[in-house]
Length: 202
Image (cartoon, rainbow, N blue to C red; front, side, top):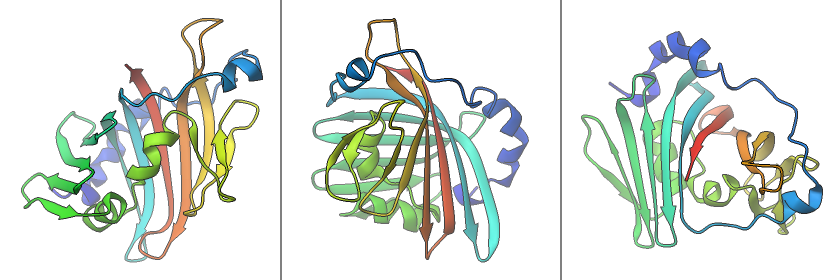
């Protein structure tokens, strides 16, 4: 079954979005928020919601994801609402390989272009290595560290990022992004919006 045609995912939307409601930012000082450090190796899992256009029609899909990265590799697994693996993307310095159920594996040097071609909507794999932790480079080429006081960022490649919710493990612990909303206008998929909710962080 094609990942980009999983219309029945909408049946699970109320369950998937149950934890997506906007919450007040945690009470944390800007200094503590900005003091968190970038981690080269992380393992995340959570939920993903995507809205885009295909052939002039609105499309929506909802499911889960597992994200693992270290300095040399990024591995993303996209899941159906029922936990089935729909697509896997493996990125190394040599390039990217994307596999989908029932299809031959695809390879390309650019993971973002590969994802857009195979999935039918853009997934900014390269940027998310930093954005998932609240770091990155903005539209003017400057490094940014997102905080609850400065949650909105525009990137050089046209993505608009909003850090909607945050989480921390204690009053003195650095905060981490909980929900991230991405939006971008594209020629391929029209106006695209992606909601990422991080449920588990290691």
